[in-house]
Length: 91
Image (cartoon, rainbow, N blue to C red; front, top):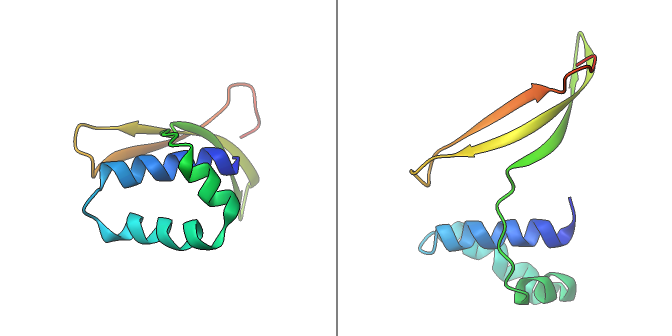
């Protein structure tokens, strides 16, 4: 995942939780100490990551490469994370 996508995702968390000091603190330090982060933050891009690929090393089966999907609910504090194997793969 690119830095641009990660910053856009952090901006969506910050917007969804405006009174939570946690996301605000995550933004404050890199905005001050990283020119790259500050420039990306100033783009005002907002994104919610809904799909990605996750890799897990299972002690018995070994490497598993799974699709990961986030399913959001109306309650902003709740989401469902679903991992599934791609059809036709050994996972």
